[in-house]
Every structure is written in C-alpha cells, then in structure tokens.
Image (cartoon, rainbow, N blue to C red; front, side, top):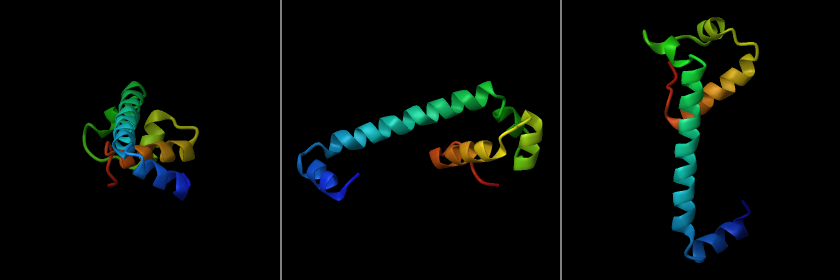
Length: 84
C-alpha cells in the first residue's frame, strides 16, 4: 500500500473498518490452515510432542519440501505452530 493511500485511509475515518477486515482475514487464514493440517494428517505427527522437519517430511511423504516449509512458517505466523 502506498503511503498516500494509507494516510487517506487513516484520515477518512475508515481505519477501524480496515482493522476489522484484517482481523477477519487472519481468522479465515487460520481456519484454512487448521482444516488443511487436519485433512493432510499434519497434526497427527505432533500428538506425541515435537517433530523435526525431516521426520514430518518422511511421515507425510512430502515431495515439495520448500513448499511445506513455507506452509509451516505460515502456521507459525498465524500462531498455530511454534518453532522447536
């Protein structure tokens, strides 16, 4: 977002609407992450505690490790997962 656009948004009185939209979007992303993790069996690997990335890749037979790593980082940024 450009600085001028941001300033116009903040001075127009619509900033609370924008903040509420961002909060709703984060909740939606989190729900999508959780539903995918459950359907792909990701959470099953954490039942007994922490799991290494290599162990997780082996268990779910991940062919795209970089994609999986980025997806797991999304889970960390959403607050669903923590780094070991």
